[in-house]
Length: 251
Image (cartoon, rainbow, N blue to C red; front, side, top):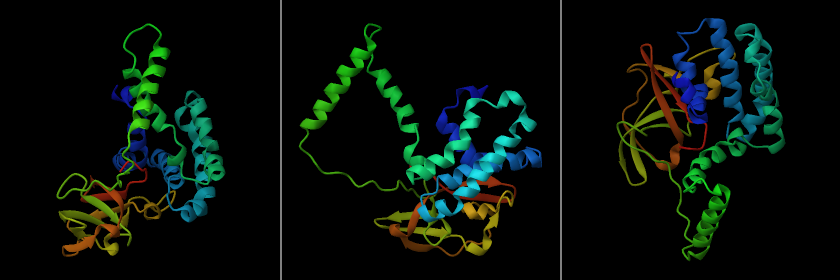
């Protein structure tokens, strides 16, 4: 099965982005709502806006308790492994660190394991090899005199990949041309944004919107890059598309 080869990043993508769309017309309604209770709760805990996250954190914890409490009835007792129980404590971590899940996740450590593996050249003393290579790398980094830190900017494109964005005004837009610090976009009206789901809450709470094909597009407008809040996704669904802003930081 392909699922056996999925890493945490693929599972995260399915939970937060593709899953709520592709499962809507596949799962039975009760199973779909149960999946959404997990997806919505994690999405809330990933909110970068501190006030919004704190406002809905208790609700997110209630959704996680609902997901765990009903998991055995829906999937059997074999589903209740340690990782499922651990979900109940995520809200405590978010509350303790006063930060979104993304700021203290283990993804960075998982991804770095492949870097460490490449440092091992033979089966003899692998730990010693890793320590020496890391020490050499740190020595080189310390010897560099260039202290300029490049400013990280969103990677944006036109008419295709990296072209869908979520604006600070709460609207979605698609970039059709990019010049300097300005972009020309097709901007969607807020009135055309419909919820993808209504339970356990309206998807619009998470800025997830369904927009019918060729509806709600304003005429092309030039906007500043500072008007862009973050990148977004656009997925086909029914007779339109589902738009959703990216929650995690790897944008």
